[in-house]
Image (cartoon, rainbow, N blue to C red; front, side, top):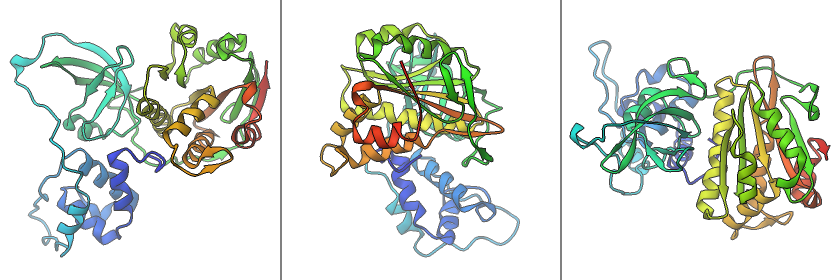
Length: 365
């Protein structure tokens, strides 16, 4: 996950781990019980060590009867102490069968690897806890979109089993860590919306207020008809917005409304970025609607209010918007297509003007 989102414990560890040399990484991997560290690439070791430390699955080194025993690094304990999370009670909960309510419900959401691994169910907007066994077995990452069944255990909604990950059956989901594709220039295709760069950046300049723009109906209708994973991202949606998008099928909605706090808005943006990145890593074709870019930037500026400004916006606001603009790509195997939706009143904003409109295929009402 990008270092733009530093609230995530796994990313904080990853920053420290990335500074270690290869011999230190192998030593850590051995201590954590990771198999065959000498045969793995540096990036793979960093990923596996980060996950092992964050999920709390720190086992004793595996013993083998073959070959000579490994030599423990003298300062390995110091490295492990550096990577220990801040002291918090273990919030992973284990229950007796008698404490489980005997019903299950369908749940889906975007994984967050925190002290407690969980996701917010997109049907009832309640947290669903994920066991460390599920995280390890399925190699879950922040941003994975999972569907499954949950049970209520002593008042906590807990994932019982996973049905799909990023649109794939659990035993078929690719777990790549880098995109290994040959990128190409996105083709300009004639659609019902006009000429769209498929696998590229498109921006719609719509009338204000956005929910009243007829073009938004056309965009949602077109997106929902595509055989892709369609992701709609928006912050501070008003009541009319939610009515407009609420009945659309075949779209994953990652949104917040006016009742949400700054952390909710930040989590929404982080979830969306991680999700689109992981879907692309899984080989999915993705359509991403970034709704009301100006509104997203306003919320980011509030979150990063203490930071220095660049072009009128907080430094990390600038970085995050540019990171979203960097997600689209086209290849012979899959693509990520961006549909950024802006209010025409925002088009003179320096960041939108130079880092959104200038680099996008522009469509207007």
